[in-house]
Amino acid sequence: MLQPRICLRQVQHLRPLLPYTPLRNYAEAQAIDHKPPPPITATSTQPEVNPYESSVRPEDTPEPPFQLRSYKPRTPGIRHLRRPINDHLHRGHAHLPLTFPRKGQHIGGRNNSGQIRVRHRGNGAKRRIRIVDFHRFAPGKHTVERIEYDPGRSAHIALVHDNAAPTARKSYILAAQGMRAGDEVESFRAGVPRLLLEALGGSTDAGMIAAKTAWRGNCLPLHMIPTGTLVHNSGEVRRIHRDACATIGTASNSNYNRRQLGKAGRSRWLGIRPTVRGVAMNASDHPHGGGRGKSKGNVQPVSIWGQLTKGGFKTRKKRNVNRFIVTPRPRGQKSISKAKKKEKKKN
Image (cartoon, rainbow, N blue to C red; front, side, top):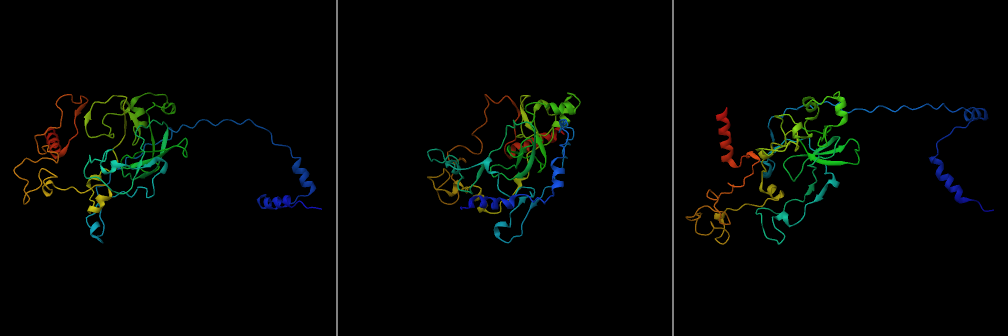
């Protein structure tokens, strides 16, 4: 008689996975098996939790005093290296689904035909472009997972996820100054939520709404932002539509311009090639080139294309100017010094 070996092997394989059941006598089994089921009771639905009732405004952490990190000069390349202190940055890789590789001829400053259109660019370390959400259309609260370094800009970026779907929806936003992991940000481009109005007792006072919405990192229309609030801007005064949106706070890593690379190789890692003076070139490469010695000749300083560089060639339009700009942003050292003198005279 053949034995059902296949069936026996299956039972032996599943036996370790079955829970252990102790032996019972007949009386215990009859008492347990014939126990009446518990009565069915109506389950009451839990009330909706309002997240705005327990929301607390994030503390405005004062900006620490300006400090640069220096290193012990073990090598000549780090003797003059100075960096801003950013110990709160994430040390791992970026979120891969929100990046794409940076490739193409434009990295070297060339157009589609291979001609150089922007000088002093080329090589550099491989990069991945971070996809930053500048529109902020997604409503609801978002939690900051971490603050990351972005090689494509001077400011830091924050990886946030939607509290309604923390594992499905993630995005990058510009990190405001003082933003840290665990903070909650929200976009009010779609209007004021119903739960927020209920938390305020149905009040539509602009001041009470601003006290709950105008927080660091939040995106609001301009008519909801109180006057004098710091927002992400470019340093100019201009007329903007009241329904246009802005982000509360200043951009992070404000001390970026005070860093010192320390060596020429670190500049090459960033994709910046050397800048050669026109006097040091040949006559066929620059109008200042050629000749004996270091003299450029009795000519006006011009660029490599022959345009005047120290006055005489105007680049600002006198007609058809942008009528929305009230005060343009300062450009160059002369403009900055003039702006400071005007502020001193006003004070």
